[in-house]
Image (cartoon, rainbow over all chains, first blue to last red; front, side, top):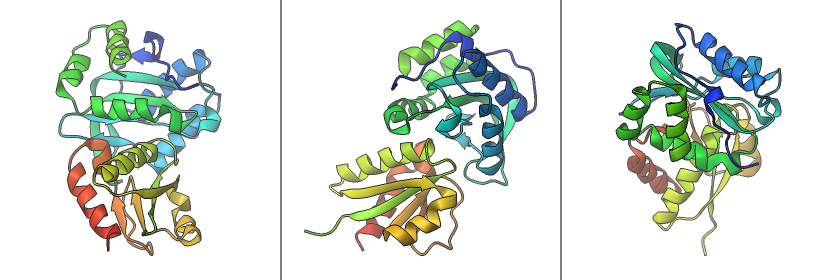
Length: 152
Length: 97
C-alpha cells in the first residue's frame, strides 16, 4: 500500500498540554482506534523520540515528526496535532536543544521507499508559508484534513 | 569509466528521514551530473556499514559523530530546505576528491 492515509479522525486541533508525550499519546490513540497501528506502537514511538528526537526548525515554521519502525504499523497514515500553545520537542539536529512546536505529524510508515513522495511533500509543505499559515489558521479538523489531502 | 561513489545515509530508525535525505541527495547530485550509489541504515548500525561496504561518505540526519573513518555530513538541510545547495556543494566536492 502506497497511499498514506489521512482523515479528520486522525487530526486533533484542541489539545491542551505542555508535554510532548501527551501529544504523541493522544495521536497514537487515534491511530490505534482506526486500526492503523499495533498496541506496541506508542511505546516504540516514545522510546525512539527519546533516543532520536524529531523536531525540525525551518526558516518558516517549527514542527516535529515522531515515528518508529514499520513492524509496529499496520497501514501507512499520518496523524496531526495543531497545538494551542507551543510544546517543546527535542531538536533532531542538536539533542541539547528544545524546540517549541505548534504542529506535530505522527507518522505510521510501512514501506519507506513507496511512501517517500508523501514524506518529501510534507517536508516541502512545511517550507511553504502560504500552506503553513493556512494550516495554523484552520478552525476545524475537517479543514486541516482537507488542506493536507489536497497538497500531499 | 570511474567507479560510482557509495554514500551511506543514516537516521534514527533508518526509514523516514533517511529516505527523504537519500531522495534529495540522489536527485540533487544527478542534476549536477554526478551518479552515486546509496545505502541506508540506522545510525546505530552506521559504523558496521561503513566498514563492511567500503563506503566513501556518510550523511546523517542528526548530530554528526566525527569518529567515523569516512567524511560525515549532516543531512539536515535536505529536511529544512535551509542551505541545501551548499550541502550538495560540500558533498560533491568530497566525492570528487
